[in-house]
Every structure is written in C-alpha cells, then in structure tokens.
Image (tube, rainbow over all chains, first blue to last red; front, side, top):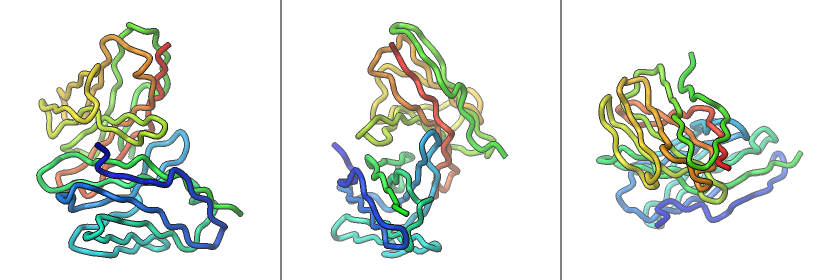
Length: 112
Length: 112
C-alpha cells in the first residue's frame, strides 16, 4: 500500500522554464511533508518542507504547495537550471510516528 | 562536520554470507533510520530507532537485524544475504523535532 505516490517517473524541462513535480498521499494523518533531492551516488538532501497548517512555502527558486482536500502537494522550481537535474523524492510524516514515508521519486532533467 | 557517515560504501557478498553496515552520526540526533532504495520503489524503511537501546521494524524488515548500542551508531545486519537484498542502503538521522532527516552517502550492496 503506497501511502505516498509520485506518478511521474520522469520529467524533462527546458532551462529557465518552470518545473512542477507532483506528489499524492492517501493517509489523512500526514501533517508534515518534505522534498528531497538526490544526485547519483549521493545520499538524498533536504530541499524544502511544509506543515499541514500552511498551503504554501517558499525558499528561493523552490515553492511547495499543499492541497489538503485533494491530498496533493507539488514542488515548483522557477527558473529551472541544469544543476537541478536530479531525482526528487516526496516524503510525509505525522505527529505520533517517528517514520518518514517516501514516494518512488521523479527524475528531473533540465535541458540547457 | 561529517553529519551521517556510512561504512562501507560498496560491498559484494555471496549468497548466504553475513555482513554489518555501520552508520555513525555526529549531530546528537535521537532518531536513526535505515532505508533501501530500489529502482521504481523509492526509499523504503527497513528499521528505525527512537533512541539508544531501542529499535523498531519499518516497512521491509525481513532478513535484516539492527542494533543501537550507542546513540551515535546504528548497525544494520544481514545474517544470510540473498540476491533480493541487492540494493543501495541509506542511513538517516533526525532530531526530536523531525523537521528533516539527514542522509548518509549510501552503501551499494550486491549479493551474487
């Protein structure tokens, strides 16, 4: 039972355009969501997060949107840069659990 | 500042052999995790620990054992390796607030 789903395995975007990565979840108890970026042969690194009390969080070129009624979140990268090419994982957790549940990842390729 | 360090980085095992993966963190984090990453499967939680001397099962615990004798170390053991355990293993740690988890560089394990 995949509680966190990233339905797009890959995405290609031109440099300078917007990248939108999507994530859906099924467990309504999730109250905190994170995005991680992973380069080949490296561990995932934290990118940005959002609490369920918010619907938007920005950090530079990265913005995460949360739609609780749809159980959907998205990561926007504007403008996209070649260095953003990586695998992006969505993760979720909730108060009362110690675990982070990850999605399957989306491979983003930013074309120069 | 090392963060989360995993040892070894690469290993090839024969079916039936045993080994231990070591994870060390220098951030005084309470929580530690072992994940495995497989193509198309994302990051799946094997075992985790909420403090020294405590461990708990994650999503895919079968065939693995763990120990947390010291707060800074979390060991993952394979008693009798199987080809299905060929994967990339990531250790992570987080503080009590669980606002984000920090990952190690990973261990690529091949079981032949």
